[in-house]
Length: 80
Image (cartoon, one colour):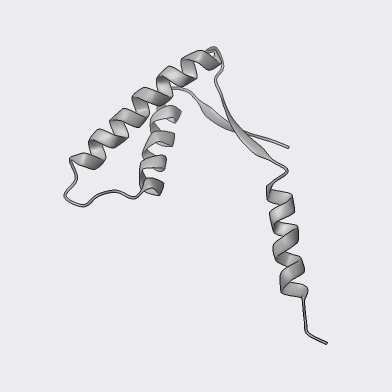
């Protein structure tokens, strides 16, 4: 009988990861201000990527956006 434990592990991992989501929170700013801050941070990351001799991956750009939002006081909160 084939060993299907790896398949069970993949299914369980997917099921558990799909149960949570991430949201950005700020101590005093509202969600509409997040959208404005996000657009600005995303534009900054794009400009920085365009000024690099090597194009940044989307993952690297996401990190830049996250760092920018963190400097603005936003923090990721995991909801389950």
